[in-house]
Amino acid sequence: MKLVTAIIKPFKLDDVRESLSEVGVQGITVTEVKGFGRQKGHTELYRGAEYVVDFLPKIKLEIAIDDSKVEPVIEAISKSANTGKIGDGKIFVSSLEQVIRIRTGETGEDAV
Image 1 (cartoon, rainbow, N blue to C red):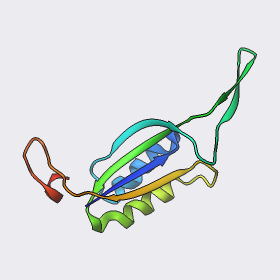
Image 2 (image 1 turned 60 degrees about the horizontal axis):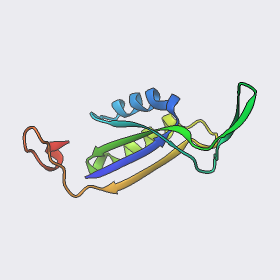
Image 3 (image 1 turned 45 degrees about the vertical axis):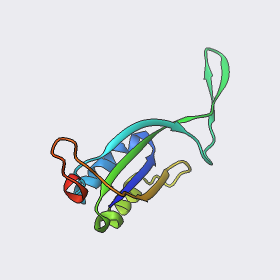
């Protein structure tokens, strides 16, 4: 089992969700986060005062999936989140040692 974590631009969430549904992903955890990388930040003007926005809004997706679905999920996220501009995001894949469904006590792939 793998945990795929993706950081994407907020306006791409619906596109990514639809793409993941098409490849058979049944559950996603979505969190609103802030961060920066090469995109750095940007300067905004508010009531005549200029200020720097260091941390930009992003969306963090977490998807627990079977090993066989890793490549289709990565491809779906990559294609649907891509704008071709800096700050499109990143995808991280890590191993899951154990998954347990609290309601039923199911473990492993059955719990996902």
